Length: 171
Image (cartoon, rainbow, N blue to C red; front, top):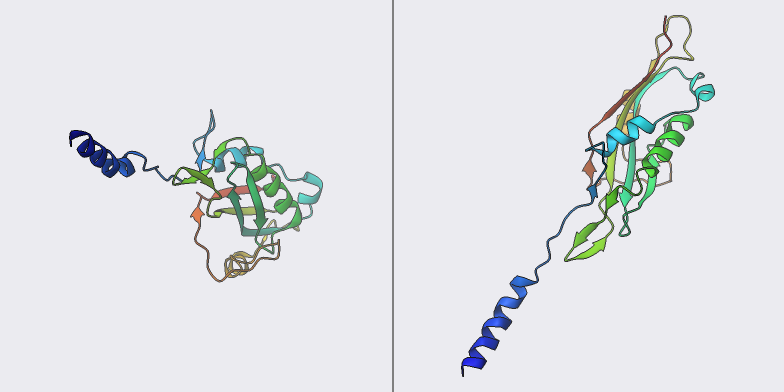
């Protein structure tokens, strides 16, 4: 009888002992606490192409962390200048190796999308006045339209801290 009571007790408690903790992807870096810090450090658009731009705007970079911990599905909002989009995508992909995957019930799964707002001002290509054309309103209206062809009406995502990048010629 005692053995049966022990077995029943163990069976009833076993599910609570093996409950896995779910967690979101973790960014781990020896120097930075946020992935945006590493991205900002590595963001180096091609100077020759950047010198042709005269614009102030915002772009949103979307990406996910796969079940293998690798960054994938990187896309920028549609009207992002190609030189900025290319550099952003490269630097976001360069965060590979610094992520642990999301886990649900102890199983690694793909994360929800991350959304990184990047505010930028480039005036290298501006006339002598130095005023860049503002495209903030257009950019905000197209926040869910990406250059990989995806368009969504809404998105459940993790919003990362915004980055501010200025590329201005000195007077």
